[in-house]
Length: 114
Length: 111
Image 1 (cartoon, rainbow over the protein chains, first blue to last red):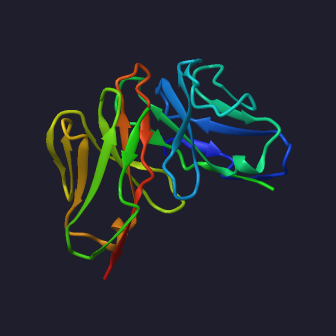
Image 2: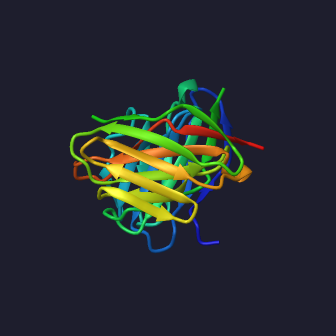
């Protein structure tokens, strides 16, 4: 399949630990988005990349959250000093470029902070 | 900021028609999306409206009125597999083109 993939599918960690979540976008898609979704809520925007650069990181809740996309393809969302409130499903999406329409979502990583 | 409102939950009967409404208040407007999300799965794209009117795509149709800040998703000939959450998402007039999602409407289709 040529869809968006995310690893791991599930991550359980302890409060205070560091985690990395990975996203592989659809090949050729230059735009990549990270969202966070809590139960019963819609996806909440975190950060958007156009190529290698973070074009909009206004959704990152605080400086514990950081994301990179060094080669313009795979992206990693990094969370330092995790807190219980960080528990959610982290969704990644990609689109052909920033201005087009359709975002294709990956299956998400369910993060649980104990 | 943006305010997107849609009903929390709806129920309908297999074979029937259901209309899911979405109202929004945004600073500018640059398109509205509908996504379907089954429990535990990723959202999948259903429709995109940027001009007023009705867009039909098989059993699903989406309507937009920009002057009223209103959209609806119409599902015809409901099937059990249509039970899912339906997310309305709006792009405002800012430059980043990032859509803001509503909380979603959980649709339950029963026999």
